[in-house]
Length: 188
Ligand code: GLN
Image (cartoon, rainbow, N blue to C red; front, side, top):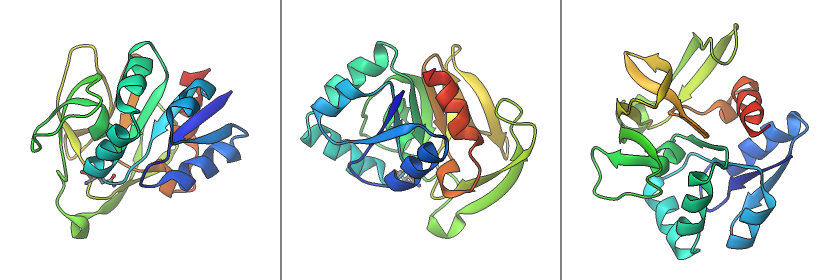
């Protein structure tokens, strides 16, 4: 199994390290050829506007969208979730538009409002997990085929639709491997 991490901007190495800790081969995805080598892909956190622009500049937007629509297991964390959303409440831009969710960018406030929370996410583990939110989005509307995995302050912060997983928070910035393990099971 080989999992790609979209490596145009943002928190790439942290995802690669977590995958490696689970003995999964991880590669950086920067160009079209890289898409042929992977069984799943993680879209990391960072700045969705920047990553979206770089996706277009690298001619990756259309082939990546097609792969996700044909079933490639895909996980978007934070900015990655924004890239996958069909609707963005407070932005005129749209990117991959593959998941039936409407997201709100920077929805919990600005950088200074970044926060951590410890919660049990039964779908992923029976033990409490640290959830790290950094200028995080939340899902304000979800289509009927979207399964809600977790809410914080009554806002949807983790969800799944078929082969697509999204989290508002950053499991790669904690020592916890449960979310990566969950995604690897989706790839398997
Ligand atoms: N606020 C960023 C955006 O809108 C996402 C933040 C993150 O990925 N940590 O793209």
